[in-house]
Image (cartoon, rainbow, N blue to C red; front, side, top):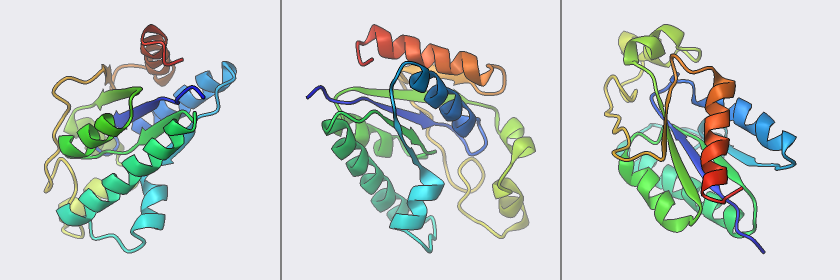
Length: 174
């Protein structure tokens, strides 16, 4: 069995990760590829139903996400991680476990992310209702050498998805 591949979409909350993921899923489906999307908000409800977003909890959570991705790709299932993963160590651990791995940095300025704020994350952070928002109170470590950087505030999602497909094809993951 041919191993699957994994694409980890990282960036600040509201950078555009989910929007690019949706476009990527659509392009992959057009190629007959059905990818599993591991979206952090959905997975968090399973792994940590009452999250406190502490560093310890995040470490356990991202370890579990990487493990699920490792299992799926080992069985030939393509995986897209739609998750901030604010520490490089979380993403690097997944890269070490998954052979066919791309790290895609959806880079959007904090001001743009705060203006978008579809889930009200930054609003809660500014109001003091949350003290662990990456980019505000919690650090976000951008990738040092991402496989691809997408300008989330300037690149249309479909163009971003096409760029990801090109890298997957170049690396013969697809």
